[in-house]
Amino acid sequence: MSKIRLQFSKTGTLRFIGHLDFLRVFQQTIRRAGLPSAFSQGFNPHLLISFALPLPLGMESVNDYADIVLEEEVAAGEIIKRLNAAAPDGLVVKKAYPVENKAASIVKIADYIVRGGESSKVRSTAEEGRVGEFLQAAEIIVAKKTKKGVKDTDIRADIFDLRFVGGDLHMRLSAGSERFLNPLIVAGLVFGEGVSPSAVSRMELYREDERGGSVTL
Image (tube, rainbow, N blue to C red; front, side, top):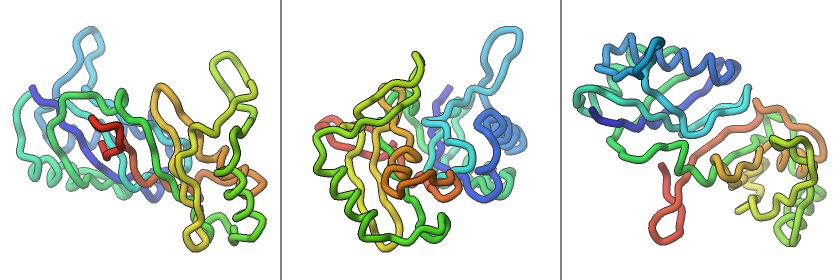
């Protein structure tokens, strides 16, 4: 058996279906592609597939990752070709490569862009000022939903970068099972009101390398 990591994008109408429905879409794509997929054991066997980090409903991803397990080795180019031929509009597989780790257990950081045009936002002096204040602040306290309920939480350590490029807000935030900061919280703080998930794109996911830096999954 071999574990394969797929780098893909999820755009268009696919961003408006929930994670469980998208999982079923991906499973159907794998079946139609005719790949020699491995299945779980037990009374209700299912395809072995896991995602690095589920997306909020309405948000698109430019570079996302999923792990699948194949019972036989298949060339990367063939995997990509078969999956894209079977995939619905909005799902594009870009890369396929063997891995030993699990994407969901190693992802640490995510890049996002809040697109000014899509959210009908125009960068203002006030918004630029808020970004500057956040980057200089020792702490940023927000009401954050946790497993134990809503509580005041300091999110400053989860913001690695925050800047405007043109009219778009670029954010680098903590992500993964250990620490996760919802980009909509930060976008709302900058713009002073709620931002629709459809205005946000997740651009990339990163893991920590041997030297403590960040590299893509």
